[in-house]
Image (tube, helix red, strand yellow):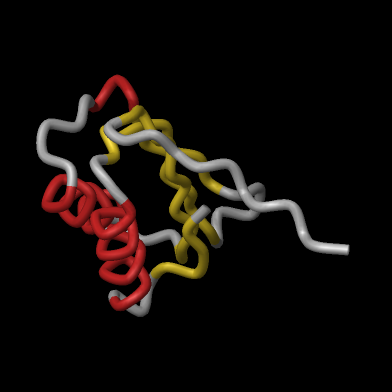
Length: 89
């Protein structure tokens, strides 16, 4: 039995990413700068920030316009390369 293939994404499209990392005063700015580099013109209204219950972690949810797999891969890799991001969903 073969595994079902993941549905193909049709680009360009709206794409929501969630970035989770250690809470710090500049964490949101770091995430925003990297996302803006890979998807210029993000709307701050499309961004949601939540702190964990104990304030140790911060999640930033943002909607971007995805143009293709290479863009998403580069964005995810640069976010993880900061050493401050635990997960990108």
